[in-house]
Length: 268
Length: 186
Image (cartoon, rainbow over all chains, first blue to last red; front, side, top):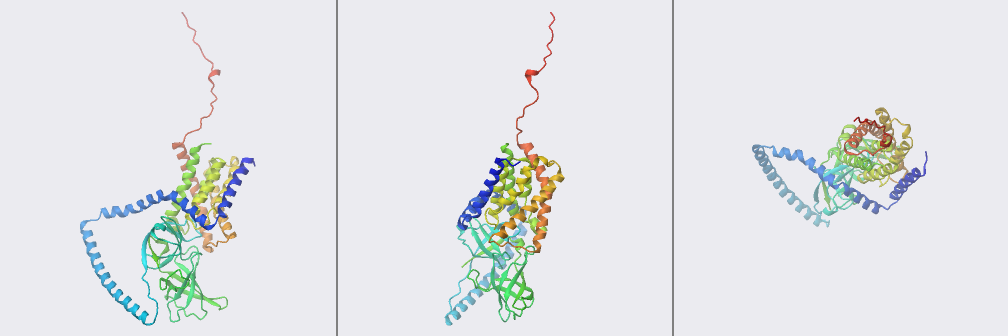
């Protein structure tokens, strides 16, 4: 039963696996990049196939409907323009006040839109792939927001044409967060469980934290990865942990991680 | 060895891995993504040569880990550890029975993620685990079990339609033919 060729084949596979697992992180990333490039033609095909229903729907749209949409978009554009003027005035005023108190100017965020092109095939990680990579100026640890502007994660691996984004709720994505209450309680957002992608755990909150369901949770700006003030979610409930040493809270994420299609990558 | 079968098996693994990254319907419906590589490994272990099984374990694992946050190479050994014993005992397995395929698919689909998680936990990486993982494991096992007979049918159909049969010796030998000669009458 155990012939020599069987041993050889098994040994060869074991050696390949051990060599791959012992490679340094940078080499592994390059290998992943090389192997991932084999799938580029399929990715293009899948993208075209995903776009096809939308294109067909556009082609089937009547002229009347198009004119109605143009009119609606014009109105929305005018509203947004007036809001932008107001925002500019507020930003200018903010800068003036900051300079009065000798505080550094707040730099505006630069956003780049990306499409989600794939999800992690393993059930024990929570990552997605986006169609922007090093060619578009992406680097590791850039924050990623949902289309509505809620935090969803950070860039964890950058290839030439695509990148991997580790989502909130993955063990590799920890976010320092602040609760929007009077005390501005601070904690760390961690994973909650593998099934429910809409809930995460906000832990290491002060034992005296006054938490109520519905209170907002935003990034604290600590840690240097995520800028301050990006909305994350809302408090669902809280409980005292380790005989009152600290408080844990469950947070319902604002972004729906299960149906991500378009995301924003945030540049500092 | 039939090279077409090797190409077919590796192509199926390639498409299966890509499909798992692109199709999110099982995840949104059942809460877990179904892995088809163990089912393809069962087919390979029962029908293909050992180099093909080794190539499937290495390339399939490599492709899966490329799209995943897994450390590169972690999925290779579980696939091989499932395929190799089946290959050794394949003469004793009724490979054409759908029930046998179902049972083997369930076993392989249960073992591969369990072994991968064990390897991950023995390293420095900490995957996302909880009580929900048990449900995901059950879904992966059941999904792989149901998919295995379909993969067998699909691969057999592809092999029959697109592949070629190896030339085999027939029992007929022209030199041993008894010729009935007609007696010519003048």
